[in-house]
Each structure stands twice: as C-alpha cells, then as structure tokens.
Image 1: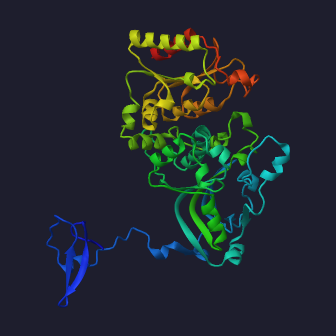
Image 2: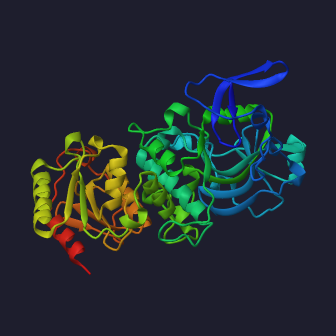
Image 3: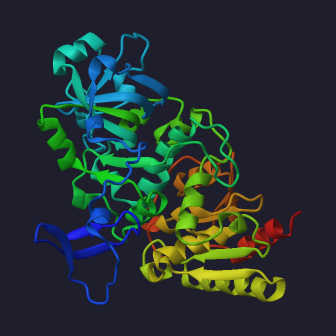
Length: 464
C-alpha cells in the first residue's frame, strides 16, 4: 500500500502492521529512511476549500439560472448554462427573441454537393430545442449533472475535423474568435481574462477519426490546452442514453452548415467569417500563439521582436503534386540564397514532412515572410508574429484560386500576396474561388516568375 506524509509530501510504500496493539509501518523501499510515527501518517490533512467536492456534481435545476446567449453569429454561439438531455441540446429560456435554431446548429449530416442532401442537414427537435424553465423541470425533474468550466462543442462530422487546415484554421479558429469576443482587452503578448478551455466535445466524431494523418490537430490542442480533456461521439451517446440531464457552465458551440446561412459571408470566402462579425481585440489570437510557444519553451515576446528577417519557403517539390515547375523552383531557391548572402536574411527551404511538429511551429513563429504553393503547409502561418512586415505569399496555377490561406492571413493581421506566374493578386481585389483546370491546379507544373517574388520580398523587407 502507499501512504502520503502530510509533512514531507513523500509517498512511502509499505504495509501497516499491528504489533502488541501498536501500529507500525513496515517499509518496502530499500534506502528509505524516515522518522515517521503512526500519528503523523494517520493525521487528517487540512482540506483545500477552493476545490469542488463530490456534492458539487449535481445541481438543483430550480436554482440554476436560465440559458444565456452571450455571443452569436451564424454557426458560432457562446452560451452560459446550456443543457443536454437524451442527446438533445436544450436552451432553457422564457425569451422569444433568440436566434433561429438553424442559425446555431444543423443535424451534423456530412456536407455534400447534392441538393437532395440539404434537407438532411436541417436540424429537428432531436438536435436542439428552446424550452421554458417549467418545461425543463417537467422533462427531466429538478436535478442535473453539473459540467464545470468552458466547453467547446464541435458539431461538424469527421470530414472537416480530421484535416489540419479545416480544423486549426477554420473550426478551432472560428470558435476561439467567438470565445475571445468576451475579452476585448486581450494584449499584444496574449494576456487575457478568459478562463482556459476545460474540454472539447466532438459530438459527431468517433475517437479514431478526429486526427489528421500527421496528428497536428492533436499537437495543437494538447500543447495550447494541456489541461483540457476530449470527448467523442461515444461519450456523447453515453450521456444521451443515461437518462440524466447535463448542464454546462459555458459552451462555445460550432456548426459549419449553420455558418453558411449567413448571406453576408458567401461560402467561397470561408465558413469562419461570421465569427469575425463579433467584437474583438486586435490581438484575439495571441493567447493561443503564446500558449503554444510557452509549451515549446520559446519566449513569445522575443519572437515578436526578431530583428533579422526570416524567409521560409515551404517546398512541396517532393510531393509530386501541386508543386512548382522544376526550373521555377530552382530559380526561386537560387534567388532566396542570393538574398541570404547579400542581405544577411535568414532563409529556410522547408519540407514540413521532414520536420518535427515543434520544429515546424518554432520556425513559423520566427518567420517574417512565408511562401509556398497553395497547400496545408501554409497553415503554419497561424504561429507567425503579426508584425508590420509579416507576409504570406501563395503560388497558384494561373486562373485558379482558393481564398483559404488569404482569409487566414488577413484574420491574423498578416499581409497577403497571391501569384499567378508573374502576376500578383492582392486584397481587396482577390478573385473568387475557382479551379477552371483541376488537373493543372493540382499538378506539378505550376509556373512562377521567381524574379517577381524576389523583388517583392526585397521591397517588403527594405521598407521602413
């Protein structure tokens, strides 16, 4: 057995023996010496009063306040006191001016291009309801299980969750933007009054389907929120079948389909856009970046003041898919190396698949200009410092365009330039999403005028 000493905090392995009516400790660890007596070992420690007790696991429903919606935009809602019973999310309120349910949630049915599937994504009473306090008590009685802290509930299916960009720079990105709207005074170094995340709930995702192949999603969550737990589809179903009501202290609820019902933000511009209609600090993302860097042992403030410019070209040449023409890639590398030799810039030709996750984040956090062909590697921009010269450069096959990484860059306060060969495309005149030639867009013959890229890099880094 193991005994904890209140005085020393040491755990002693041993057995308790009664000899002649006296209690003795027989130690089983070699080399352990102690002057403990049985009074010390059996004394009752002083209890901490700031920790919840077993009695706090349940709350009386009639004593709980109604559900409050603190923030809402299409697909992103922040609740206080949100209930769940039999798998149905319950907004308990007497108010008649709450958002339409379809603007908050969908059925969770996978997104497809079939018009006939649209009706399958519409929410029903099985998914979410608005009920009065008296109806709540009639439905599940006077007691609910209290789920403490801050919970992020992701209502998307695995198709988007198990992808690094879609998770980190869309789902989680938008959820944090919605949550951060509760603190308008987030500072440049990431100081915030927001409580940390307690748990993520992937309510429609099996436990083996939530990670991307390199497991970058897991790395992000476990690094930024090391104390947070995760729950999955089977956990949600267990609670749904328990016959018990659950009340969550605070919930950030996300739904991709619901976000597309906001007409101000067309689908081609990215589904997290509605969250950015909420009030927020200029430094809304900095608590996430700061936590990640601290986890890696990097001073976040130092990475904001890097004096020597760092240029990172994320190369996809080894992939054989969506990559530059061989000669254009070589010309770009040669031009960057020339800048390194003549200007003293720090240049990295990075192949993300050959780098560890900490190496990828560390390099991105120091990068001034990040460039590469349209692809998942550019998600690393979320760790860049939003300095005046911080820039993302993205290369496309001419006439093809996806706004994903442009949207991310602008949301983070980074500069953005797209390239079609020798032509640059920049905000606010970015084209709409288009892939006129899918084979060429995804191919390994993407043209690029390296001289145009190098000239722009010099212009940015030499500006005051």
